[in-house]
Length: 292
Image (cartoon, rainbow, N blue to C red; front, top):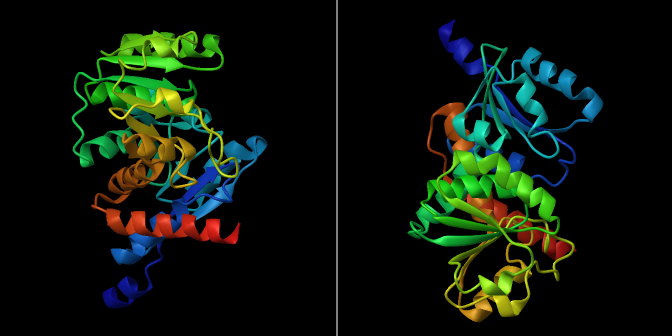
């Protein structure tokens, strides 16, 4: 009887909710992890309208899901449904990973921050005492600020089209971190030689607008480390210019994979096959290019 139960045990269920989710790479990454580690589990993406968001959360619990990811535009909205929230998620005020305990308790986390931290640490980049320029003041910028603070960055410059939004972001986070936040008002040329890292936290350069770049080429120097949260295309125009200048170029693929790996550890307490995850993501992205 016990053998029969083990053989017919239903798979663990995980998912993604957001809108849109059509081009999400999370199902590919997560199902690859399950297959590689021979874990009896499945991962499915669900596109959810805002009017049905609460019903979707209840539905995942009712269907005995073990956890789910949250993507745009619900990373802040999910917080009102959390029974507990991790420190990083609380500081950023955004959740992208939820673990369901006993079918009803929602433990909420932010692994986007973990993805950025791991990206730099696994490359062996010692960021302690560095200064960075972040372009953008949205959700990705919040995760970058917290991650850079954890990495020992001492000063963070923020450049955003709307200065008011950048000021609101600084007001939200400055008291919670050690790094000093400085809001720029277009005077980027005065600080560009001072910064060590340039980080794009905007969608500029994302497919299909692959010829766009958030900075003029003249602002990228050979001593810079250039990081782009955009992962489609794998090498954005910003990163191509960085390589051309001899700077270190870091793709958003790393952040995507490492945040996914952190999610797996939260859900299953296992170390995922990171290089396999990276390989399937890159192959999928290259396949999209070939079809376009």
